[in-house]
Image 1 (cartoon, rainbow, N blue to C red):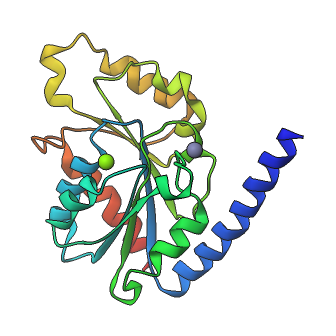
Image 2: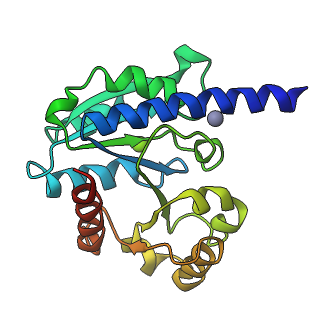
Length: 220
Ligand code: MG
Ligand code: ZN
C-alpha cells in the first residue's frame, strides 16, 4: 500500500517534470540541478560561479530550503535573479518537487535567462529521486564529509552528471583521502567528471566553470 502511494507520487512528479522540461526548452533555458548534503558549500560555490559566468550567461536561481532566505540573500548580491522556496509551507519537504519548480520558474523572466540553477535542499537522499525537468545534475561533496559518502548514497552520484569535491583548502588540516573519495565516486558512476576545488579560495574553479559554460552553450 505504502509502496503504491510512493509510486504514484513519483509518477505524478515525473509527468510534471516532463512538462517543465518542455517549457524550459521553449524558453531556451538550460537547467542545472545542484544537490548535496547540508554544509557542503553549495551556496558559496554558486556565488563564485555566478561572478565568473555573468553577464555572459544570464542566470536565474531557484534556491530551496526548509526555512529562511539566507541563501537567497547571499546569491542576490551577485546580481542574479533569485527565487527562494521554503518548503515548511508545504509540510517541510526535504527535496524540491517538479510542481514547486514550475511555480517558482514563473516568477523569473525566463525570456532573459540562459541558465536556471536550482540549488536543491541539502540532502543526499530524496532529491536524487525527484526529477524536476532539469537538463543536468551536479552533486557537491566536501572534504569534511566521509570519503565513503558516494558508497552510502550511490543513487545521488549515479544520477549526477558532474561531481564537485569542495573545500580542498582544508586538506592540510584533515586526515582526508582525496584519491579514495574520487575512486568511490567513479566506482558508483564510471566516467563522471569530478572537480576538486575550493570555492573559498577559487583554487580549481576554472575547469568547473568551463564545464558549466560548455553545457549551457550546447543547448541555447
Ligand atoms: Mg545553501
Ligand atoms: Zn525529500
